[in-house]
Length: 406
Ligand code: SIN
Ligand code: CO
View (cartoon, rainbow, N blue to C red):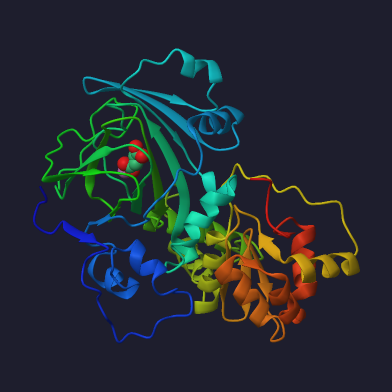
């Protein structure tokens, strides 16, 4: 039962056509199947940031990225942020990771869920799954979260502030959704559970189905049987956050020398009053804080390319440039899984740093930013960027071959 505006799509839906130029990033067929037959440009126009979409069989024959044992291991290791949520009669208990393995032996057979963030940082299949969403800008990608839920388990009715694709893995889950405007959370709950959730529609999803939800759409997912759910989240910074970060950036980048001076000071009528002169000179000094379009580009590039705070980069023992170049030309290179590489104009941004791109580096850097990896032959074509790639390799921004054992 779906409420008005909650659109059901399936691979069987008549193929939509568009006259829009298909960007090179869009692999026809792959993305369209993922979006239930919709071309990504149609999806963006109709649904993105606006309207939910349920896609039956978004990834046919989908198989889980990992099993419960592996998920518990990651949650226990502390390499990814994790949470265990127990729910009973509308009451929720939250335990933050790292989570002891022993904890899972004592859990009841029902009503709990384990959520692990940033699985794409530690799992290659997770990164491969994310690459299916490459029709969306990397600057908006947050991470891939995996949840396992025992029957009855879920995080409760809530809203997210980001766009999310909820891909169902093995097992069945029931989603309830609501476009309600009352998003007030329950007071004194460890989770931001909605005080009053009025579902307007629900659907049961099975392996390979996917539900897209725009930000601030109330939803509640309850496991009908033991199940895995994969949340591909696209975050957007709050204006308050952008403002604070931009002011901090300006503080780091702008210097105003000198000190307030008042050689003409006259005896004030009131010693306790702030004088007109002091206010005028301060206003004049502060009006010298200026920024240009290029300041905003530089700020945004650095800010959006920063990794999450818990990410530690471990630079490799330094090989010579010749050694690196030889291996990179054969094996290819791949970006660190937790680092976005972004670019704009003649600058590339990675790890919160800005790099000027020379014309001969451009093709290689742009291809790496879009695809996150370059094969050996692609590295050979990107010859001009090889020196920069070598520097980035030395800083652990990328590796030779493919990243990690998993
Ligand atoms: C879950 O996987 O249980 C929660 C995902 C969500 O509701 O955002
Ligand atoms: Co949610």
